[in-house]
Structures are given as C-alpha cells and as structure tokens.
Image 1 (tube, rainbow, N blue to C red):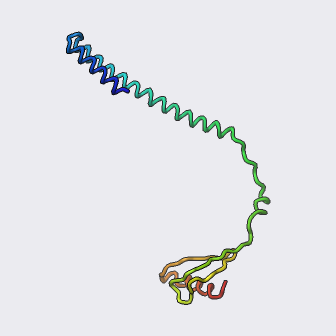
Image 2 (cartoon, rainbow, N blue to C red):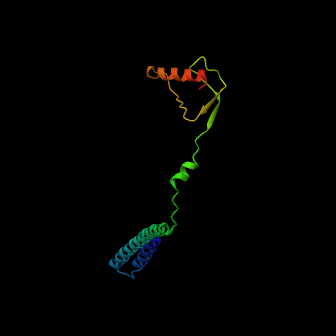
Image 3 (cartoon, rainbow, N blue to C red):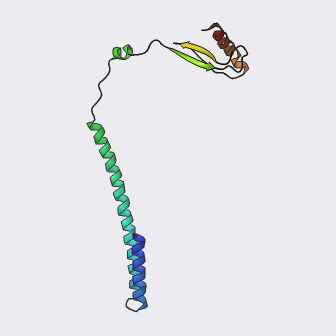
Length: 139
C-alpha cells in the first residue's frame, strides 16, 4: 500500500514538474510527506497488531479465571483404585551375548521385577551374571 502511494506521488510530481506546473521544491515536499504517511501507516498497523495480541492474552486470562475448579480427590479413593498386582509377559526375547539364552523364549515379569539391559564392560559383568542366573532359575 505504501509503495503504491509513493509511486503515485512520484509519477504525479514528475509529470507536473515536466510540464512546468509545479515547483521542484513542492514536488520534493510531496514525496517526503508521502514517505512519512506510509511510515505512519506501517506504525498504525504494527501497534494495532500488538494491541490485538495483548487483548487475546487478556481474553485467555479471563476465560481461565471463569473456569470451574475441579473437585479434590480424597487420598483413600486414590489408593483404592491403584493397581497393586499384575504381570507382564515378554515374547520372542533374544539374548545375543549369552549362549544359554535361546531365541524366541518367553518370560513372565511380576510386580517389583527389575530388568536391566547392559553392555559389555567389566563394571557390569556381575550384573549380567546375576541377571543370567535369575533368568535361568525362572524368577
């Protein structure tokens, strides 16, 4: 919009200046004011956009203040609905590092079971040995 305004002002000023109808100082003043008006239009658009964004934030805060508060759940009701028993089965497990583990084995894991996946280092050799013994015993 502002580019169009400046272009029209320049064309009108140059055409009137070529025909001798206007003073060159007046043409320069018109182009300067046209640039100033386009800058003011850009400022108005920017400020109105910022005001709109601020009002959206105020709207959101008002909506959150009018929202109904959820009821508090009693502590005994929470613990009553918790799952306290359960099992998980892993099928088609593979053990690539141990020779005694076969491909496609199934393993049941009960509540409180700890499963670890470790890489080959001397620090974790004892853990791997313990896990291997536990799997061989079926626990």
